[in-house]
Image (cartoon, rainbow, N blue to C red):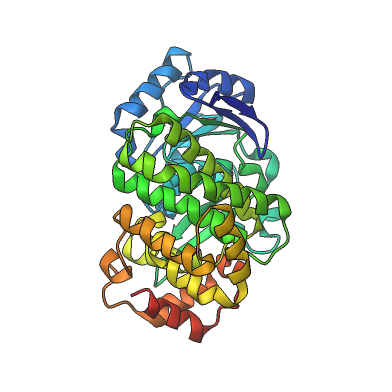
Length: 383
């Protein structure tokens, strides 16, 4: 079976090994003549970025790069990126890397020509209509991890550091869905094992929460189910043998599918993970993995029969309990910390974390209503 394809759902996707070479053609198709290449600090220093910039320069597109992107991007990173975009006279963004580079690249494009605050575009109601849609330059997304799926998302996560407690905010606008995505599994081969593990569990969490969300979206339901199967069959392979390009390809698909599916909703995994990540600067996907089993227990009364169905599809025996045990075994095999304490959440302010979790939009998609009392207990169960 050939693992090469062209897809137009949810956007135009160029999938297959070596397809980074098509980046200049993607720029031409979207009308980008002077792109700003946005990536994170760590990735900017690696050969994969230099090689990609060589491709751009060789096509006469320059090699302008912005890499002041923190692991949890914040408004200072965004303002610096907007400054680089404007001063360089750029007409489009190439968002390159993991979730941080992809999210910030999209938000730079969103905000470069707006005259409102980015916080006015938080994913609340119809706030996105406050933005001027016709001034958002085109975006091309090139992921180098297989987890967040931000390459096919209409939102970006930004940490607001101007408040008393850092808060991760979801910024949404439909026009920041990248016009073209290049999914090249070869770009993920150099990922460290802990990043392969954490990003892979992020993809699994997206699929699981979308599948369990009570909202109606049958297309997302099916995508989430198949995404979980791809993770089950390929994550440990990619983790154990980083050069396994077939496993890497399937994980890139699973990540993209998870982000497509979570249009149906997310839940307590993410509403807990976001404040923990903002407070302790933990890796997002790894944090999702740590809280996954306690959240399954928390939601059991509402999702048990649904989990029994997914367990059968994934050929996991034992129904809900078997699925829960599988998650624990997978975390252990990936060397995921056993709890939030081991992850670094020492002496947490549970009241503050609880308030942050309840403010997170993800909690609205949880199958069991989250309250101050039960959410605080849930945090305690994760420690």
